[in-house]
Image (cartoon, rainbow, N blue to C red; front, side):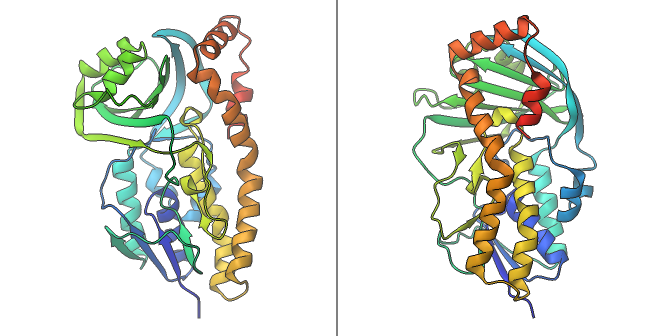
Length: 336
């Protein structure tokens, strides 16, 4: 008889882990503080996850209809500084669509879902914490909105501004996701706050394209109160996804890391569920595996991040790209 598992958080890491464990006969209860379907602050851009990871999780078919993205263009202060083909094609899909499809898959597999239900952040046996970032004071705010019929310069656009940066990626044939990370300014609020942040950062061309297209106000989402990098959680907690570590959004690797962390967790948790291993040792084994998998890419991402968020770094990046010295392929693979 297998031990049951409780998962706190029904995002990518929590749902995919729940599906994978149910497919292996483990009893799983999942608690999600919100309800489905819902929009989340997310680049909705999947890059770097191997097909074998999605097969392990049992969700590969749910991404079959995702938008394929092959080209990228980077802008600084509204001017294009770089354009290229992505070394590996990426995928774009709405979290509103994907999370709900995964929710259905989890329930169809026999998983027990509790919506609008919160768990206490404690390291009790059998509890896997996937409830997003650990709340912390921070200077950043994340904003996201869907826009229909908006023309693009490339499949993936990255726009560097004085106050942060924004990415634009197609998530359906007629819809793009505009998602940005900005220095928090409490004077900016109300309707149209995302274009306000864009204009504050000198990205008026992107703001104008947004406002000239069809903005979906129901898709707007915001999040603040977080730190990038490894999250400072209690050492006795088993954490996955953003609750374990948050990569800077420019990497386009956050969704992939959520899936990868869930896939890594399947084998050790299965050993616990079948009575082969005790929970404390299971947690330690998983922590070591996650550190080996993600430490280097988080170090690289944290080192590169200032170049995108500070004027001197952006000027250096623009000069390097104009000189055709940017090692784009090397940087791309280092972050994945």
